[in-house]
Each structure stands twice: as structure tokens, then as C-alpha cells.
Image: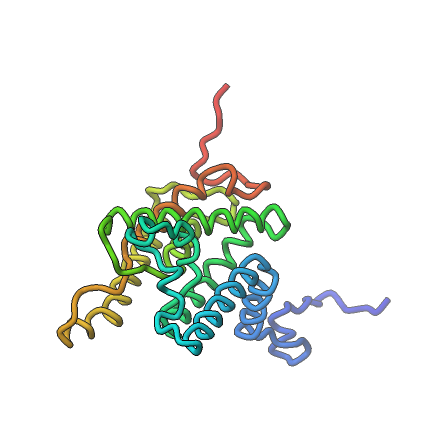
Length: 257
């Protein structure tokens, strides 16, 4: 064995890096790799994204075949559509979009909140089924809140944003321990504030130009956003939507026997 002497001091990993004897850790590169891996492994979100893109392709196929509504007349949700017997519209409307900008914003949000939700629920078959149930239930609650405000409405509502805001509501309570944070916690408030700000930004982008041009105040189904978000907040607290291996959180008080 080599004699290192009495004054030998082992080098740290940081010293090895600065001396050029160890590979440098590229934080940006590794974070991108981790993000891509989380998207790829979140197979329920990949399936859902594929279905939304397929529906959008179908809409354009309808457009090229003479349907100016791009299938919205068939699949858009409204009180009038339900009264006329189009019972499928609460679900079909979640997969239809009004244009490239609309679907781009929704899929961007789905990529963020969907991947985190998949990791929380689990990437096995059971976790995937839970993801789809959570997504659909949040979307349906968003539909219900929208219809409550537009019980006589004729204009159809389309888009996945109600269900996606539901995923955002669920993510707002997710913690590293696997136990949902309390609804009235600082963590949830910060996420809720971000959701409110995002809605205001969406209104500024899509509604204000319409108002300035003499149009009406419409085009953003904030009611569906609200309903979906609240549904996600509440549903993620149920045992069905919690990880199977949850660790105690700092707010869990020990039982006294």
C-alpha cells in the first residue's frame, strides 16, 4: 500500500472537478434529460396527448371536407346541445380545440401537470387508470360549472383546459412525502394564485383584443377552469388518488393512545 504521509488530506469531489480530474456536471443538460424522461415514462399522459392530437387532426379533416365548424357543432358542449340529445358532448368537448394556439397552450400545460400527476399516482396500470379517472372527473365537473352559468347558452364550449386545471389543482397539493398538503396551506395558496394569474393573462391575450375591436366579452370558459381546479384540489385528498407508499407529512400529528 502506498504511504501517503501523516499530512495527507483527501480531495473533495468539488476539488476533483476544479482540477479537471472529474467530469463536470451540466445542471441544465441533466435537468432537461430528467424532464424528457418524466414525459416519456408518463405513458398515460402520452396516450392522452395522442388522443387530443388525433382529435385535432380529425377536426382539420372535417374542415377540408366542408365542415366550417371543424366538428365543433357535433362535439362542442352547450345546454342546447344537451337538450337536443347530444349526450356525448361533455366528454367529446374535452378533446376538441379551436385552433393551433388553443391546442398549443393546453398541451403545454398538460405536459407539465400531467407528468407530475402520473408520477404521483404511479406509472403502473393502476396508476394510469387513476390518472384517466381524475382527468375525466375534473373535466366533467368543469363542464357542470360552465353549464350552471350558461344554462340557456347556445355557443359551444370546447377544450381540455377544464380537465387540465383539475390536474393543476391536484398538483397544488402534492408533496415529496406522498401526503397531500392541507387545502388552506401556503403551498396551495401560491399555486392557486398562479392559476388566477394565468387566467388573467389568458383573458388579456384572447379577450382584450376582441373588446378593443368592438366585440363582446367571451371566448374564455373561466367557469370550467374554476370547476376543474377545485375538483382537483378536493379529489387528490381522497385515498383513491394518493400514492400507495405515503410518508407522514410535517402537518400529521401523532396519535395519542
